[in-house]
Length: 393
Image (cartoon, rainbow, N blue to C red; front, side):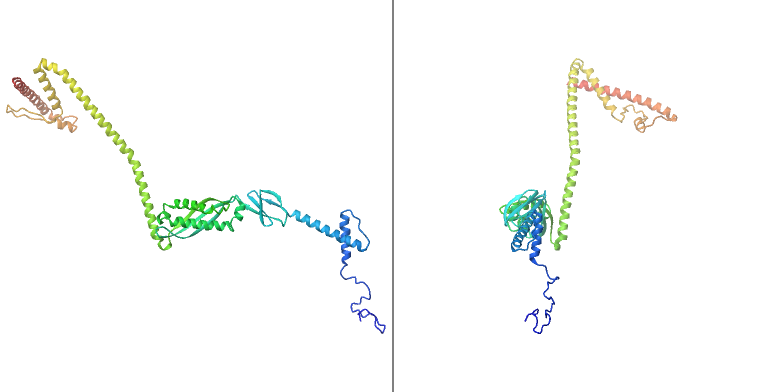
């Protein structure tokens, strides 16, 4: 028997909720009433009069209208969510249903939500890819090399879809090209003078490797950051590098010394050449003067040979005796002659002679005059005898 069914003994309802056949005011609202209110609300918005009837046809029409309104609302939300912006430094890759469709430029754009998806790619930023490791050189030595490559994206669609991971592919190509170049170089070149060659060759090798993959990447620069030997032999290599630096320093100092001395040596050579040229010209001119003087003297000698010969002898002896510091004395008479060394007094710079020695100086000067006269007479006698003997011949 139901809870609200009257008992046989005429007692009241045995309903445990004690509804007594009345509507529970605290229960949930009727769904039909809710739909009716929503229908009236949207009908008022679109200019339709709200219906007050409770018939089934009105309830059905209100439910359809609510569905349409919800669909319109969802469409508006979907349309509004399709707007997006691409920055100035970016390019947008459009995927339609997961497949590449097109590429959009910077600015405001719209795409159908859940149909197209946009992947923005920065094409102006420079990206960095480093690599480092122990590598074997051509002369079977191990070096630690650190290298860094800078690149940027020039084709976003190729960067995304040419390979699975373009950055990883670039890293593998960079490591392979660097190891190839180091493996074909000696350790001294890698550590000292060949660093720039290693950098250039690595750059060229990297571009050759990534070219077939068409990664959409442009390599901007390759920087060889560090090359050093293993820690176990680092001190020995530091000494070797220091010796090479000293060698370069000595070479530069020698070149500087050469640049300093070379102009001086060239100037000395030029001066010696000019002196030699001047000496040569002087000798030639002097010889020409002697020849000219001889040519002028020859007619006079032919006219008066004895007088000319004596005059030449006297002039020659005068030149010789003027340059001599010795005095020639003809002591044939046997008389003693006091000699005063005037040349030594003159070389000592004696400006004045003391008065006590005046008489002695006068006596010696007279003796000198007499000696000079005797010398001249003897010289003339010898000259005349020699001329006579030459005349006889």
